[in-house]
Image 1: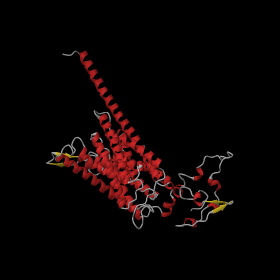
Image 2: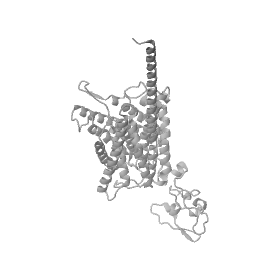
Image 3: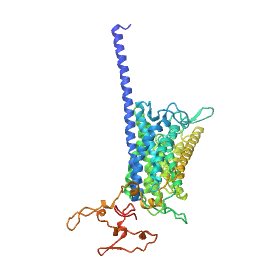
Image 4: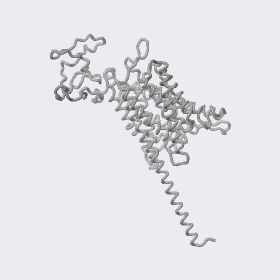
Length: 508
């Protein structure tokens, strides 16, 4: 029988153990919160990647316009997700279709804030996909409206279906009197994020119409409209490649449980393998079809590979990730050609990358997942899994498509979807924002080589006689050169890269 002293010592030990458990639990919660916030910060930086990529892919006269849209994606999206996005996605108790509490984060526990931040950056990513497909011709007011609604309404419903435990895709399908259960598998959002964004981009671009002169009006053949900066596209691509590692690895949502580190590492390794295989496959396929080694298509092929692997990056073998990337490249190229065949103009190929990569990723995981994929287990369970993936892909496409049709259709009926032809031709930077990305007056080394006298900026010397008359802008002008002080002036040299005469001159 224990003595009173022994009982007191045992009680002290028990209290110390309870205190230690509490301390460990609090530390684990802090570690998970730090993990989520760190991954979310990296994913948030993907907005910079989208901005660079889209800025380089458009003509210089639209650069400021596309940049402000990318910057506002995160700010407008944040407000929308704060007001009702999180509530629709994860509001409690909710139902199979959507959540119904925590409007404007009311009564949301501080312990949920790391997850809120992480889910918000995913929502912002989905909306950003659309802006590139509508570049150079979408009105700014229309952009504000659709960005708010996609981030705050369309995307949260889909994320509730798949990532809230009570969402109908998360609940899944049952067979054989409930003995077989299949849940929609989308670890990091091939369907939730990328099919949603890709579908919205497809519908929006179709309703918006192509850029002027993008397709031959008689033959329907596509005409290339190159962007102004391949280096910017490359920089944006690298930032997105970097961000995808956190996008997929961070989707584990916690890091302190047993085997969490291995899952995160597996997701990241598979992401880079799928992206690498997608890029290299696209490079080779493009070279077989065309006479050049294409940098831009290689970048898009890599992005398609990383989009595709999102769904199953935590459950594939490394070789399975390579297979995923290989077919993602084929899906991307097929969708790229299909979009052109439908005469839909997508300046950054967002539809082919995100919808093409996403739809294959959602389907491919049913074949390649190492625990129950069709390639490993040819049985009823794997067949049910494939059916569930198809149901998920089709339902997300249908929801996003119908919602986008309503949003963009309404904007088109209100005649606020597209800018006037003059703004599209001459550029939106100057008239819409008053801030040209590349003003001519800002160029030059600042010193004359002969006598080291500071040069005078162009805007300081422009005179009315240097402005091109409207007759010079006819469809086939036979312009007469202007002469100033006995020197012949080339009219084209007086037009800034924004498509307008420089400050102080009349519009061309």
